[in-house]
Image (cartoon, rainbow, N blue to C red; front, side, top):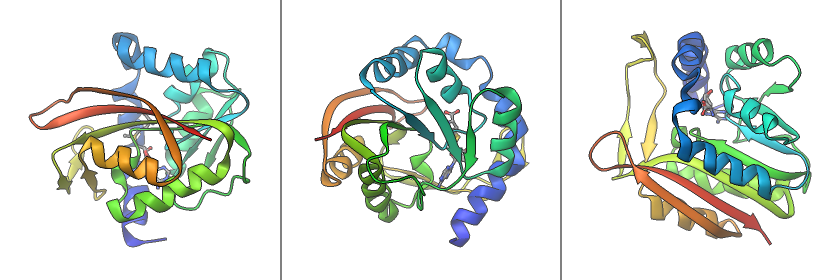
Length: 209
Ligand SMILES: C[S@@+](CC[C@H](N)C(=O)[O-])C[C@H]1O[C@@H](n2cnc3c(N)ncnc32)[C@H](O)[C@@H]1O
């Protein structure tokens, strides 16, 4: 495990409770996000996984739409919280940089606001892993911060808790190009204004041919 991955895991362990409180109920006020997740649920055939699932609220929402979905997260504390909150769903500790899922084993993969923690140089390898795991026709959904390139090193997160994770903001077209370079066909892109100047929220649908 790289030092940055270890720092990301420790930081999300530290903020897990306050993040879970921060995110609770948020989807109810976000109709565009529910629409994107709803479209993904309709498009996917077969089992699916959310990679970087945090406290499990997105995984749980997709399950409520009828998906056969489980969650994977780098942070053991996040996984504990998700298992407690949603005891009928499966959550496992794991990193998107070294997923142990079998080749062509899933019909859907979603990474929802987790890939921005990857240094850009690691994104192609992670996307190649997603492509390996999806079966032909399988669907990928990425939700991500995007925008003017920026390398953020916040020192506090979610209620003033010290953190040492990092965020790598990339232009949306660079994320799209990386998904295509990994062998996917991009089928839809939604770009919404972000929470600060130069920022966007990107929802990207892709398919393995
Ligand atoms: C901002 S939270 C998003 C959680 C959830 N997807 C949501 O939308 O509420 C980012 C999550 O990504 C996880 N994460 C960061 N790097 C990861 C990696 N390499 N592999 C798996 N999960 C990772 C963190 O532990 C954290 O739970």
